[in-house]
Length: 290
Image (tube, rainbow, N blue to C red; front, side, top):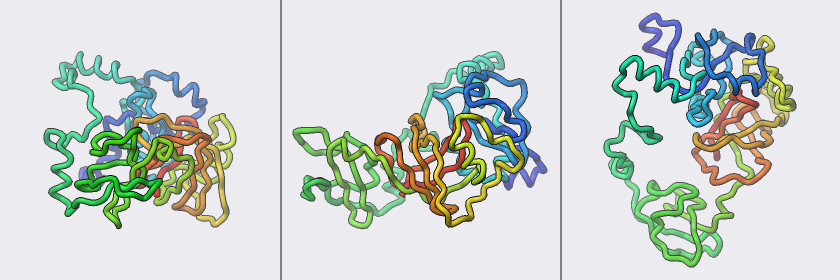
């Protein structure tokens, strides 16, 4: 945004697979939006702009964009959001772009040879610590640094057991990794903090109780959660970029904190990951799992 201002640019265009729509122009239902395959021009953006999923569910990147501030979202243009990846490749092929046949990747592109451990080793003072059975409290082995583990991990634990074991909890204060059976990784309820709201309180209360699209009224894109009153609404919630957002009840505790209760337990929501709230295709907001 700083560089755009220095160049007197009104908008910023990126290649993310998501959409930005003007709340006053968004008159279609979520199902109609999902069926829309292409658009001649990106939708106009205003200070009431809304962030939506891209039409290609396999490539949707709205999850990672929930951290944008409202003023940034209002200046964002996403020309790929209304297209599927195969169509984008077709355009690239017609233009003769060198990247047209580049392999798909979900990895971090700037880390040489994808050697993440070596990068973190050079940035931290991590050392060995205990691998603890979360049910019995017994130490079953040792690890070579907590940065090597993530919640839900099964491989590379270095423990021989009669049943599959998974990373259930990581405690940096004790330098300990807790492991246990699969059911311990299935979580139904958790807290979310540092929330960035992209849609206001009134609109959330109204739209969180209906399947209809109703975020097009003037001002509906303006956050208004400065309240001590409990506010609950229905939404779908995603805790990893590659997972499907699942039904849940979100209870707002204050303007930066909420409780999420899934209808059904979900696999490995981990502290430090983002939880992003949706109503239909629209991103309501999101924050950090505690």
